[in-house]
Length: 304
Ligand SMILES: NC(=O)CC[C@H](N)C(=O)O
Image (cartoon, rainbow, N blue to C red; front, side):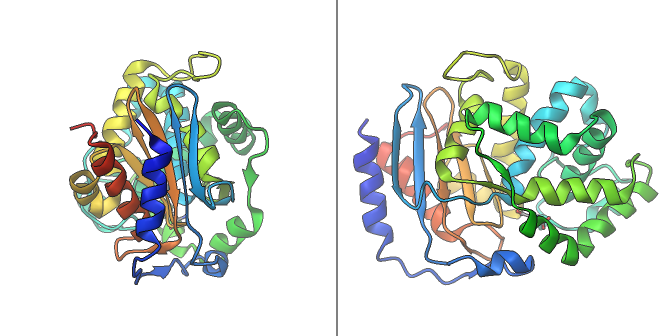
């Protein structure tokens, strides 16, 4: 498979695209990002790299970080995690409060904000220094020490993140949050502010395409069973109320963020990350989704 030729074709095709959405602006710092940025990176099972455009430039990974924190929580809690968060697609926007009321504070899945905040509660409760340990985890699976939080993005979200504060308070009132609200949202805003490039994301996500092991050293990071569960959740819940559409168009497990990044994996084959900050109405990268649709169409391969 000539991945570089396929990426070159996608880049060429996309340069003529009319992209209409807007960059996320509810986090003020994200509104400053140049909307023309566009990059893509594939890392395959033969340790080969293929890329185009701004694939080495760091951006705010936002909700993509929910896959990392879920992975850490699964290592700590095992199957008992599922008493605190469910595994069903929500069909609602990522920051919705409505289902919590009639589902007694058990979020639908770990990739909507409500679920990710319960995961944060677990990590804040169980780890001595969750921010430090998350960085260590991400640096290790990426094989790159040069990854950090973007503190200006974290404090920008803190200044406007009323909904997330409301979500934690509400879940706490329903008995599914143990720690201080302040500590949980501080950790959450930091995880969302992680700055990574497409290349780094493709490297980090290789563990989900490689049965939980680092490709470079074969170190075991996650049990195959955990990877099966995480990939199933990415497939069914990775794109909020657009998870069905992503599955339909692209056919790979993946995760998006409002910074305009999307990561997807083809088990045993490759991991791929794409970045274009303009979002569609559901909060997913418009060009990113199109580029991934072209990737699975041009390769003729998806998980289906
Ligand atoms: N979908 C996203 O990327 C949302 C993440 C963002 N930090 C929020 O909580 O609103």
